[in-house]
Length: 472
Image (cartoon, rainbow, N blue to C red):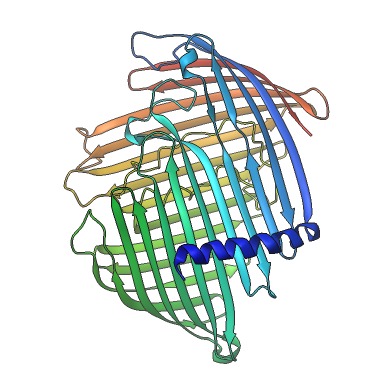
């Protein structure tokens, strides 16, 4: 049986089981719509020949959430229809989608995870200017999906086995290397009830990525040995071999080894760190979380071998949880930012250093969030390093029972050169300031006012937006 046939079979079985589990879940369906009118004094972000324009945006959307013993669903979709008064040739529809679903059956021994997303991204992130509303011909929609069945079973009292399959796809509306991937992974891990504090495992995985111009192959096998030193601290070591094949490098196979530790001093604090040595160099990862009654700190760092398609769906379009971990219904009518942390949409494989940090503070009448991100991509070709940095802070304040205010500041910078810190690098920088008000007209209707200033190396843009939104 081919992988394609196996995935098709899993899809048919999953559809049959899905129909029997829908009625057992608790469902919430939220409908939203927004109509905005915006004036811009420099819609093309020109340095000298500024063109003003008025454009209208209609954004209908919905959020579907379901939770049950055998099914969890989070789905949010909102197409944004843009109509330009002067530049009608730029009229378009921007799709924004985030879908996550998990089905479980056979006493949770078999599960199927599904995810899909659609978002606006820069075609060339190192020429990033403005956002999706500006007429720069550098924004497109990136689509991705993944379906992953997972089988769990126990081998007596000694070990637990996991067999997973995954099929993914990444597509671009304008420019980019569309691709499909087919993968499988197997894990055999010790049963804690039998081995106690001793941890061991055997892991193997393989993946094939098909592009129009060729394919990339990745596979590895490794063994894991660890020990639970205390209730709060565990350490582990791993070693193995990987065999890869991709066009951007010649020597793509070799031994791997490394280790890590997990530290959980309190139920509200956790830290996981890992270090590894591979044929291409070192890898590492850090994941830190700390939560207090009204604040949350989180930070992640990773250095790994990856590609543009692997990073396409890492950041969710819509969040179904607040920064404090509480479930929420996202406002799909709000404009989604266009990030600059995506790589050029091609088949290149590179080493990426990524850092993300976020802080959220709940005040008596408002919420303050701050975030920082950094990515550095090291390609095998000399003089082709790339980096992007973003810093942002948002504050929402409840001015009265029916009136709330917003203030946000975002800064980003991209570099592309052999030395990303050099002043001779190809550098692009932008600062964006947003401030606005929302007035609750009734239980379901709101009136919005927003002012935005964008400033780059050689341009500035002022925008004023008036809009009305409804949810029910």
